[in-house]
Length: 414
Image 1 (cartoon, rainbow, N blue to C red):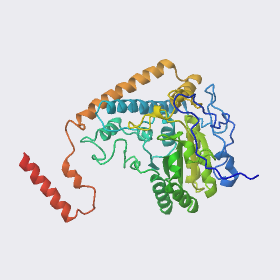
Image 2: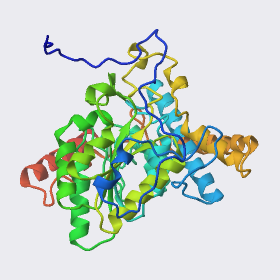
Image 3: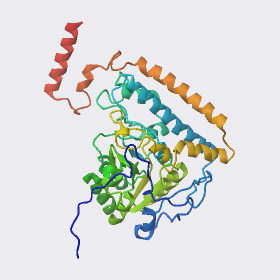
Image 4: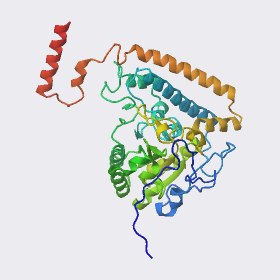
């Protein structure tokens, strides 16, 4: 007898009160995945979309052909950036709970993705981040005070009060504005990369979205253009298992890895351990070299875990086990890099504690300075006349009149 069609509704492996279950995550042995030449055809390296590139094993030793062989001082700098990102995150979450800022999105557990990928890029490369890539700003040298001021929407806010907290941008650092509209940065990055190629430049673009956003049309539009025009771009899917309260299976993660979606477009696709700094760095460097040498785009799936809530408006205890983060099989990215450095004999628990204390002091001092520029409730505040700036290249008459009316009103109040 033939069966009847049945609707399949994806189900999370565990709900609140149940034991965490990550048996669905397919993990390759560290060092077991081959590293092809950057000029390899996408059809010849399809296994990379299904295997998982890993460098660090359970003993924190670096293994295999993807080992990037970075110097110890380079890794210590990376560790500092990751730890600074986490402590910045901690302070901003506390500030939101205290009513000092209105909203915040943490990136706890995903620090290796942004930091490693930014360090693997060149300064001229254009980054199109998502709202969980604070580490990209920090790795490019952005002051935490600048980031804090944006969250405070104060007189030094880079966005002049026009964006939600965490929607940073940095023109001088080649970091595009974060958008609350998901997946928009994908076609923007592809378009920027195409323009760079037309101009004969060596710079490439890199963009990030979450796995849930692969269901957006922009994801497919971007891949089509990237493949057809051989755009020098890296397109990252950060699979942190949850799109707010929606399990990754709802976006199609049960069927095939998200990285495999690039194969249908003829795009080189790689799946990587997103909590292994060395693996993320190596894969990104490979993709960057591939793009820079004219061999086209790469789609990278970063397999990681969103350790915190989706945002300060979210309570993950309502949809997943409270202790799920402790059971995540790929561990914590900061702890793993720290343990690797200790295993290599170039770091110690004492040095790490000292670094952490130094960073916390830096964050404390930065927060004090940021507050001196104002907050949502205490001045100094943004100049209201700036509402009319940065909208049109040539300000139209009706805005000129409105600005003048505001000026007169303020003078009368004084």
